[in-house]
Image (cartoon, rainbow over all chains, first blue to last red; front, top):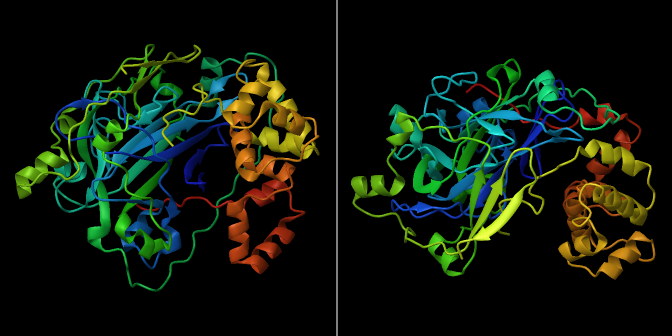
Length: 353
Length: 143
């Protein structure tokens, strides 16, 4: 089952294990300059508000209701990153999940169009948490991504449009598979005896009835997709488990629709978050950027559809002859480095002041 | 707020169910947080020391000590929520132990007071598994 809890998206698989829970956060962040320089990881500026699309059925496109799921607001050319937080099983460890992240139904890891199921060969189409704490963009080279940046669907910028040539889906799609319980218990043997926590089976709720009002406030131009922005150093790690360790018969999926922040208040009655600062202003203020390494994991290689993506700024210059606003280069001077190793105590080091 | 990780890099998030059960057997806010903190100290002595926790949530160690010993009433909502994060406990559990209801819940109730008061009364004696059926799922549709 999937729930919204304080703007966190929580995937639970109580039928697999009572602690098989994965929380996904959608973090606001600054957009890194789209200037061919390679930047460290930008900060999190708090969670995007998340809402059930069913609660605003009279104000969102019919397709959104058909897709189900949730929605969040983003300004044009605003960036986001995803944070994965797996549930912890006392005396064993964090419960592992295979997570597929797609934008406009294009896989952000291997660039393939959506089809059901996990895939490891010829290319891995998922990330593994714990291990992959965040995902900030499309894998365009080994150890290098292009940041997720919101752009209006239908103007040619989104990864979906660049790969398929059509602007059909937009938004972001998540599919989560838990590890099989027996595989989890094999990889994470109990460190000391402990009483089991009872849990109750969750039940489905019937869907809310659709409103008959069809006066849609959210028009097609307010529907956003994700496009490739500036380059960032981030490794997407190879799955270190056996492929059969994953529960291929159990998965949950969620369609995350993106509405232009300009119409968020009209649709939901709530103000959207403010516009993040530019990377240049943020850096000038001496605020920190981040780096992350896991020495025990190896990074996957990129795949052709994503390697060939054209960034928002490049496409804007090509199409309209104008540069992306707020795209001034910057030199991050304060970089906080996290270095971790699975199974060992995490270490933090600050460097590159 | 500029963060990537929380303070705890290992992100050990415990199963809140355990602490909901635990909390219902504890009537005293101070003794609950003290026992919880001391339990966590078995994992990391320094990080969960009284002084370190107090510093992290920006209160005086002597004040936290008095709260733990029941010599001071529970602190305000913001401090309780910060304390809950540090002690890896659901904030609503700590707020309930302190006899408080979070501001967001108060706002929700105030928008439809009669309806929500009735809902809560109706749910009062229902078993947990039945109450959990009311938790709303995110609906999946046709992609």
